[in-house]
Image 1 (cartoon, helix red, strand yellow):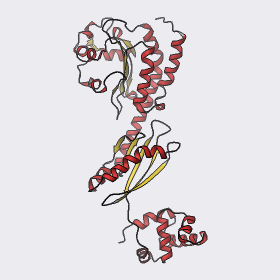
Image 2 (cartoon, helix red, strand yellow):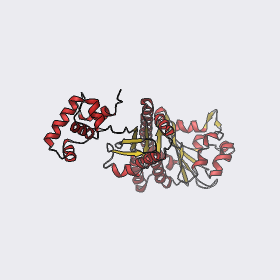
Image 3 (cartoon, one colour):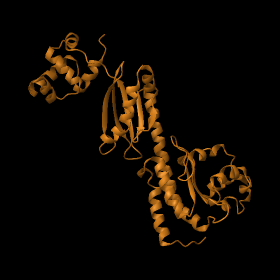
Length: 361
């Protein structure tokens, strides 16, 4: 099959390769799928296009032109007819790139007479079809690009379009593998949060909630007035995260919120900005009321000044900040800090907060 490609075709192919191998340069999986379809549809002379990618947390089928809700009824529609005992979609997958004529061995009339075509494809103006497929566990079973003409009679896909997609198929496979690997990694991460029993929530950078652990769901159920906590989660996982994230993954953020019955500390960070769309991860803990100076004096044998220093250490204050708060010198603040750590039997000032929160048995 000899096909002559124009300089414009070659330029578009170069752009398409870069697009296909860069799924993480876009706003999520659907952003990538939308960009791929928008670029390839005019290159192939198609009237509409769709992208099948069955990964967790996403609609399996995406199209810029067609109603997503209706398109995703595809699994409920009778499958295309067989060709010599082999389903047309399977034949297309074996070929990698195929037109209807290729998938049905030169005679797609059986397909056009099928319930699949008349009940699903034709109502969506999906007539002559060109497909590029990837098959295997590393590509979520079966992933594919579909291109259609919207009239039952008229232009058909031919050698030129098949040749273009064959050139692009390795890049398509690479992009699919990367996307599937990232989504599987993300699912493993979310499963790990569940197993740890932490009260945590995970969202994307648009504030869309992706996951709430059972422990956090229980915490929300146990609070008779969870509305402020839910609102703080939405705020922190949405615009506030984007405003505070700086250069991306690794940025930390925190917030306190109080309901009528409890106080909570929300702490989190961004994850995965170097590969895939960053995730906002927030851990939620009940905040314990700070003990009084008198209680610390009685419990740990501290002086009143040492108890004041202990409370400031529990609030993660530095020696300089302690000195400013208590109107003492940094040297004196350091001496009090060392005395507090000795009496609390601690080596690290970062452990004071947890020590003060322990129940007094």
